[in-house]
Length: 260
Length: 283
Image (cartoon, rainbow over all chains, first blue to last red):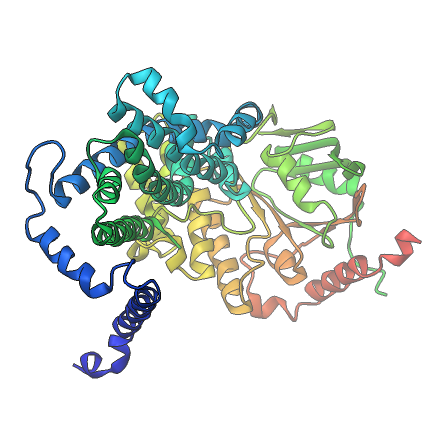
């Protein structure tokens, strides 16, 4: 009861609302300055209500609801992200556990990591002969690095104390991996996954603009061609919100596996 | 200062213990060097020490005198550059379940419960036992250090003294013939430390004083109260044994009573003298 009456309980909500007011304020200002070339928050809100009223309609390949687009994008993101994780975690474990592995693999990682997803796209097209495959490919190849690097870092930073325990009590390799390496590296791995998911969500829009057909990135490009800036602004807000939710999800996961 | 204290020379002390009981740890001409960026650093040099079965020996000295290095050579964590360590009749090649270790900073795995921390060690070492037997061992040892009701807690939820009891229970649980304690009570407050000393001796007594205990410490009172002999190290690098001081106090010892025992006070003075008289050696 006391907690409900205390203003501090509502402080985070108040700050969030204030923050959103600032954003909308700046947006409105820009609309005024650009003579409504950039639609006002109000105009955008009208379009947004229409969009989310029937999110899953399907009027053929070029006219689908925003919900369909979002589901399709998330499907690709999770597929590419899952494939990246399956490759990145074991490779990271090897890199972190073996100095030779680290020296052999690290230069490759350092060279490939900064490459833009757009540069990978043609290779994806060549390999998969299809835009959908290429989009998943670029998500895979750009999102695996944070997980790989964080896993390797986690494993390589296992404190000597923990290693000594394993040595003193004669842990087998399997017991060492299961009881020391994985639990110690897990928070680092989850941090990596969180960053990788961020990258994957960043890349999907660019990928789908190139690949076309379906997805939130395609929707943005399609709205530009239809000169509906309201829809683009709505898409930007949706992309941002979904990205935030994904990040919060991994944040919760991270807290789950933090020990003290 | 006091010169008529009963101290024995290294060799004669060893001779006495060899005669009285079977040697359990035999350190022969041990030298340990490390490669560092600045060149080779020799931590300990030409160490000879015999420890009898069931004996409690403390190694005492200033920080950086190589006490932990000497300990790690017995545990097998570091390899000798020269010489060898023989424990239970075998040359030490690496860590083994015949030597239980209690580390300086407890070294519990923070993601495992108290129970699991001990179980993993027992499960790893005692491969010949059934699961039920292993569970009984864990239970017995946790009860022995009075931590059974805390078995499901994580190490982070325990006080320093409790953590150390878990570490000791873990070392006892694998039933080693040699127990190696590396500054085990260094991080504890004086009161907790006192009760941990009694706890340790209780466990040692329960096992018919069969376990050989080697302990590194920088606490003179602790060394005298617990040990049969106190090994005083010179300052490193190239640390050697300066002197071995016998502690001929009857067991069981009473912490309060022995503080006024003239023998205790003599030994205390002697050790203080040895530890804080370093200028005469260095210069």
